[in-house]
Length: 261
Image 1 (spheres, rainbow, N blue to C red):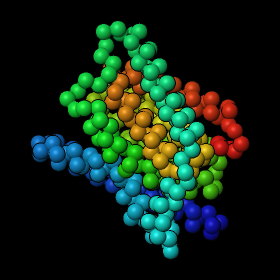
Image 2: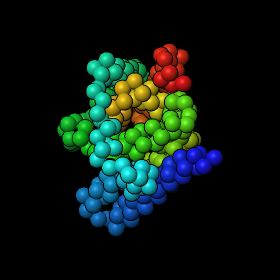
Image 3: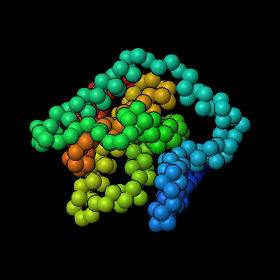
Image 4: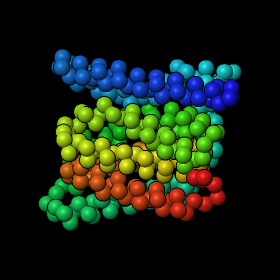
């Protein structure tokens, strides 16, 4: 019983602090918009808010792993050599999902601009997405939470728990989309289906190759696909999230060795 409490308390504290930090900065972003401060200030607050899980983990690190050096811990997350087979597979899967989504959308609306045509170069958008998402989120959610949960639960159950918590962390953003009524419900449903499916997929490949670069790369491709594919957001989410669900179900069915059980 004591061992269980020792395990749960730091993890619960990490989740609570992650949510609290994000909400504080989310409120700060709202205030900055009301006060019409320079866009650079709002952008900075948005970037900082996306790193809330990393900040929470760093703040609690000494309590979670007493006697362990932070540099050593982080270094070990990237020590194992990345397998070319795993890297190639995750890229191919996500490229197929992007291409399939574009193909479906192009047949629904042939006049639709299907690629990003905004003012910023795609490379800048790539870096912007990397800083706002994977770099600030994966140390906490996969590097700590998933690995810690897998000490007690199966990889599948652990990935679902992380998916629910990770998805719930995005809750304030759901109500900042501008959607209301049935469209908001549809957005939340598609988002959670996608985030849970993606959490399972990331756990699968992360367990195949225990280098944190694997979930970082996957997370980046996931976010970037929502930038480069243009059209109605709900239509895009419908096909992308369903395709990720199909992949997750296939991986659970295949399940080589003990990757998900």
